[in-house]
Length: 295
Length: 295
Image 1: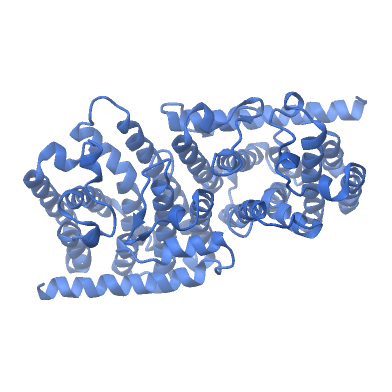
Image 2: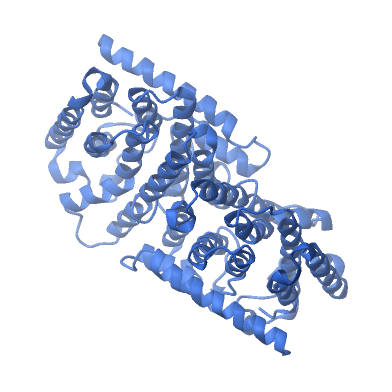
């Protein structure tokens, strides 16, 4: 690894630590299977890319770290809820997540449904509190945007399209997969990238362009890792998409073209950051990391 | 039925119509199984007691009806989400709701999980919009209170306790059931009753006392109807609690004492409304209705 990459990994690890400390304090104490499951799903590692985007863009706009880390914790709760529900037998039926049993495997389906439900709730609760931003209008904007990104016209809408695609006779086209992923994973990544701009009361147009490209690159790399990775390196079952005959960026483009497409998106993302100059170097490294990562 | 009761039924029906009209407009159009299921679960009738409490307390505090109906729609979305998830095979496994197939029976478990998820999201989205209240602080208070009422320390926490009770060797005590119901159904009823006070920027202490008593009375009546009602009158399967050997207010107190307890709670609830005089007559009738209803 070169020095820049090492530096980025250290930064990512710092963000993860700060976010987990915030989550430790914000989540209810582990006093029942419900709260144990909520903490298990939220505090069991992960790359914390969403938290990184929040905290990095907050830095760019000089948002106090105490505020940034709360917005980061909120989006990680929302993300954790979506993973718990996606892993359920009625959905993707996954036994492993980050190398550990999924919530419904460690407890049961009912606990997993409820823990996901309560994690969605607490995401909004965290954002609504004055400590997240002194200006009520800023908190309301974060809440409104998160609801748009998470709901039927965002993440959950994308997850529904993904499930419907499984029962279709014809595999999805490249355009359809792109649209699906923009909702399923892109919307929450966009929220995370724009959160710093919202908290810093700044225009978020350039960040939105970066976020869209990076979100798609992220998904392409996930599809690549499903083919090239192992359960050991990725911490989850691999080869599932091919086995299910599911259309992915790799099945549609081939491995090489998928890699090139991801790299092109990274360039596009970095170009959008030009107005910010060196203040956006963390975001540029993040884009590079996303297509180089092995898990 | 006497004139007062008839008048109350007419009022309840008015509120239901106004709330459903608002929901029609606020919910995304039925363009996929997800949004069809969201609309099906939210627009398929029900007593709309929560909406009634919101709109009635808003009237008491002179909140514009256009605001009141949005808060009412929000809590009905939250309530509909909880019913969809509660009805799932992993939870209560119910086939019927309001005399119609439950969402997972009409579609499937995945669609039901996602429709519930998106209905929770939209509840917060509705509350966060300026049309719900011009003052951002009021919207944030509604959101914060709803999150507290719905999450791990509220409704979902109560649902978890309910599930855990099923696997216990000893049935729940009266105190335990009371605590469980205060979370599972009471918290959202309390939010609905207090919403008018929050929107009207008024003290909600007396409303909170009323809400707690009425919420418990509501649950006792539900337990009574599970014993005395039929699927035809209640629109859902009855006798399930007794069949499951589940402790209820009726199994612990007996039918007569349960009825008396519910009636005492109604008196207690109405006493708490004394400071509001005749302005609270709608809430008093609602309390009477709750223990007299047959579905």
